[in-house]
Length: 347
Ligand code: ADE
Ligand code: ZN
Image 1 (cartoon, rainbow, N blue to C red):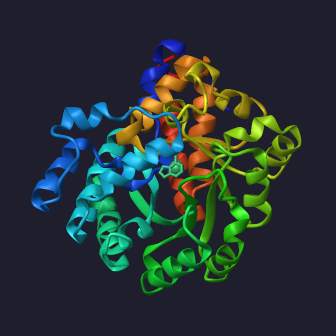
Image 2 (tube, rainbow, N blue to C red; image 1 turned 90 degrees about the vertical axis):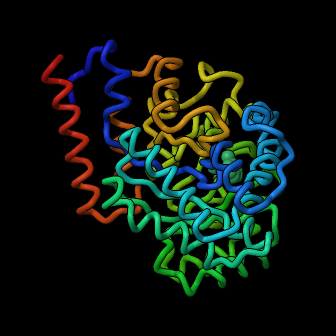
Image 3 (spheres, protein in one colour; image 1 turned 60 degrees about the vertical axis):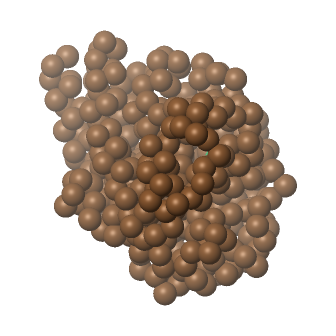
């Protein structure tokens, strides 16, 4: 346990502390400026005349209203170089927030449905991840998310297409419109992914009720729950999440933008941590939701009155529940301790 660091130095601590990001959709990191640059070079028409007009359209009522605009943005991605550049831009931005490790979500189906090959997507993303240690001083890996509004059969096809590139992907996830597409729809394809040795995660309890979190755990047997914020409506589930140390990758700014919570002050992140749940803080779709990971940290801490012990817990959780090996986790946790010790020495 580190000594409490003065609240006046908390904003600086939140920025400086090493952290891992475990819930970030790479297509959701595509900034309007990059959308316009890629649209121009790939001759893709856009529905908005300027960067400002596009950014101005980023007002959402719920998850689906966001997914519609997010999908428009993905239409500019055509070449392996586009996927590479999009990923490099995110890695550079994340490293500026002291993200030392990231596990990046991507949706192959979005792009194969636009006529691209899975290899174009995965090779572009992977080249950026492979270069991340030398270029940015960080590590990065990839998690392929099935789109849950599509069929089980299509998820199987997406998995098969990725198999020749198996070594470039650490895990499988489940994203897109949640309500009406429960985890159990994908139980068999998650069984197959598990048999192939993939690590497993799923979005659950973002908008849909706690039953979706139960079935992500029991039918899909995932190791982490993405979002999971609806869990606080089910006290038995809360006890299970705490007892089994099931990690939740929470995305506070996303939840406010998509109206899961009316304001950050009403977010349950602090309640989760105080209940002993292994939560982490993440940016989800940072180009759309008003901030990268440090903005999620600083605004949540200000809104919820959290302190340096919450900060340490969140950063520690992020490395511990990552899919890194034990030695890499240890190295990052030592770096984290080093930063907290430096701040404590100046207290
Ligand atoms: N795809 C991108 N962002 C998402 C989110 N917040 N929930 C579900 N699917 C997504
Ligand atoms: Zn997400």
